Structure formats: C-alpha cells, structure tokens
Image (cartoon, rainbow, N blue to C red):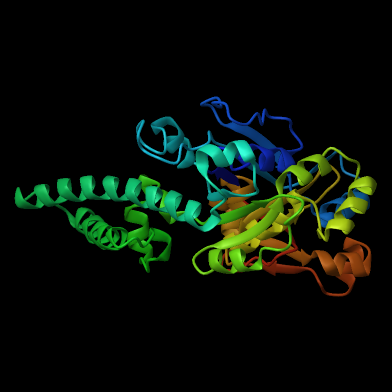
Length: 359
C-alpha cells in the first residue's frame, strides 16, 4: 500500500514523514525542497505476526508494509504555475490513498509570508486543485469521445466510458470529488486507466504543536464534515520516533497519545480503506498479507502469487484466534476448526490460509 503525503509549504509534511518512518529527511523550513519525493517503507505493527513467528519459528518473518511518499510542498498560489508540479502529479497518481497535511501551529517567520494557520482553508484549497486537475483530464477525454461519436466511430466500451465521464465532469464542476459518486462496477472499470486523484481515498492530518495538541476538537469536527481527519503533534512525534519504546511510552502518556504516529495512522488507514490482514504460516516463512475487506479466497490467493489464483482448487483455512487458544495446528484439526473453503469464500481478518492449487 502506498500513501502520498501532500500539503502546502511549511505544513510540516516532512516532519510527519519522519515521525512515521523514523527516517531523517531534511525538514529545513523557509527553503525550497527537492523536487523528488522522500520515500520510506515501514512495517505494519501487528502483534499477531510476532506471535505466529514464536509458534512456527520460521526462517523469515514478513510483516505487511506501507510505503509513504512525501511530496514537495505546494506553493499555495498559482502565480508561478500550477499548484502541483506535473512530475509530482504523475507520482501522486500511483498512491493508493492521499494524506493531506495541514499546519495548525504558529511560527513567526512562516506567518509573515503565509499568514496564521488555517487548516480548513488549506484543505479546501488543495482539494479544489485536485478537482480541477481531474476535471481538465475528464473534459479533454470526453471531448474526444464526443467528436468520435459525431464521426460515427464509437463502440459499446466507448459509450460506457462516455457515460461515466459525463457524470464525472458534471459532479467535478460542482466541486464533488469522484470518490463521492455512485459509479457502477463497469463505469469504474472504464475509467480505471486515468488514475483520477479525487477517486482515491483522502485523509487529513492536522499537524498541531505540542502546546495545542488535543485542544482542537472544533477544527477536527469541521474537517470531518467532508473528510476523515486525525491529529498529530508533528515535531513532538518526530522526536518520539527516535526514542526506544519505553522512553517514548512515558512521553506519550504525558501527552495523552495512545500510540506512535505510525501505529495510529496505520489503524486509521486500514479502517478508512477497508483493509484486513490474512496470514500464511510455516517453517520457511510467516507472513501477513493485506487485502480489501470482502475479497474472496481467489483474490487472496492471487495476492500471494498469480499461479495460486489461476490454479485455485481449495483454501485450507483456520483462524488466528483459534490457533492461539488451542495451541497448535494438530489441536485445530482435532477440534474441527480446519475448514476447506472454495472460490467464493470471503476471507476474514485473522484467517490463516494454505492454498491448494494446480497449474
């Protein structure tokens, strides 16, 4: 899973990135950042994986992972061109979800050029630009399809795409992002190649300072009217990421923080994106896999390897919690907890799968 971090200059984006990844990307304020995004891969903390590793003692233990991409700060105006540089826009489209970081801390020098913090206004400014970007692409393609129709060059696939794009253009023109539209499965498939940004899930990270963290319920309520938002104390949490777990726990308790920035954003992201984890186990490897809630056994098999999906026969399946309670696979079988599931089985969070296949 890839999450793109975007935000206006000096919003603390890279500070949040460092808090999430424990990296030390440059966070110098008031200077022009590099055009290339910072990229960091982090493990998804899941104690179930660690427990399975204790039971099976595999050669390798592999957690699920999230890739964070920290993009160059946006200028906040179009006096020198587009708010989003073209190269950044192309990379943002590869993300599975977008996290907009907005400033909620005071800084005398930043305020001289950018004014006092305006988190809600900043989100709306960025969202409008994302909508405008998608609208330009959709209008251009729709014009081409309509021209082909006049020339008598159109098939059923083009008609479906035209219908979907007409709906998208109408709603984007009214500032309604694509993620809020009710598109059919066929309509979604017809526009998949465009990688529209406003079709992606979007979350907001309210970046507060240590002094006002936890005192911004009114701002969060406003943000949550249209988005999914959570609050970080960016600088404080970046420093926490450099401490060991025992030291960090003491400071987090003082601040009323329930977990590390990485843990909280992971939980938030999985919930917002509707993601779950299943596991494969054995002496060679214990591994967590991430899929969409509602995915079937064949989709899960394909996550492991395309051959497993193509030659799928059955899935041997039991649940993590049953394994922990009973203590072994032998006990799982003795208590009738091992199941054989077919192609249409909906995988549940915590399932342990062994795919039977033939190719």
